[in-house]
Length: 282
Ligand SMILES: N[C@@H](CCC[C@H](N)C(=O)O)C(=O)O
Image (cartoon, rainbow, N blue to C red; front, side, top):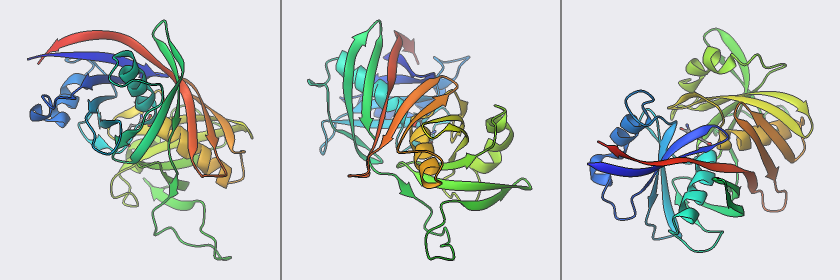
């Protein structure tokens, strides 16, 4: 079977995008398809695959599978790539549309049309949720923003934020860059996170700028994570370290995050780029 795909990236977080509006690929099993296509030696190579699907509740449907075949509820960088893919292929008309995901309805808007393969997209990522519910209340009866978590004999102050998918955000003094591979694997499978978790290590540069490195659930260290950048902006704001608008600097580039006070929604703005289009034999 020969499959047509688009290889795209959002600040270095890369994906294989597939049009499955007619459901023909579902029979192959998306998890297996993800493992095969994401393999960087025997496949195309990517952090995940993203499917464009029909939807009964939104303009279009979106599913994301990590490189290990596990399904995630949402993907922030992937959503910008998806919006550019949908727009460039003419799957929908208009520059703003509703997308059904396992994390609810997400609304991307193309704010700068594709030029040299690059599209600028702003995504309404919805509302963040502090979790898990087991997190204790502090002495004043407020919910603690972070909890101590021990993994591999080390203690971390973790702020757990769901953007539909789980994130464990840890503020460190100064990033060395080795944190994801050193500490990510044991935190990803910590029992506090029954669905496993993405792990973000964060250095606060100023009230409007942070640096973040990430270990992703089901994909390992990646160059960037959009939902992770949103979770980071929420955590650092709740910890009193940043304002509601922050630039998150990742290995692959920057994302602008704004947490709107009026409706509690998070807007994430950044680029999406078509790397190439191709055909692969499976
Ligand atoms: N890189 C993504 C998140 C992809 C899913 C994640 N690994 C998970 O399992 O939750 C992003 O940009 O948000």
